[in-house]
Length: 186
Image (spheres, rainbow, N blue to C red):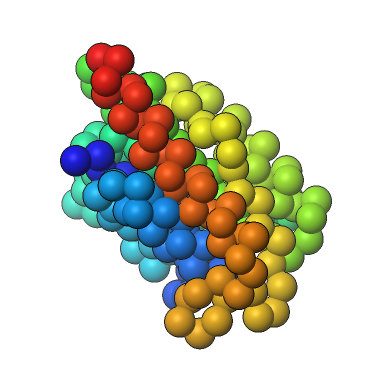
């Protein structure tokens, strides 16, 4: 089974970023991936990286990444870049620097940026791609940059725009496809 870990969201439960991440992970599940999600509420309990000894929650995040065949990272665009919540989670991956597979070396990574303006989403996507490259990961060819608006997601988390839903699902499917290709090549 291809294991896909979703990381992202905002401190507010049910944020548009969390809803977009859930739809992306559903795309991965539909493509045959076994999905798990670490949402914003979970991430907000992580201590700042480097603040001392790693807590059990930080260790659990690192272990989940170590066991993942692919990742989906979703961040809201805060002032034109990745949220501190998501960046802090990714900073904890420094703990894998000495692993046989350091950081996320060779791991397929799907990216989702959500914003209420077009410019902030684009710059956040660039920042996410740069972070993934720095961690030696392989961003999928398609990244979903979702420009939010009132009513884009209903109360149950469903996307009301079929085109955007298709984009999110495509990211999830590409993560599974690329993770499988990497495993087959090994």
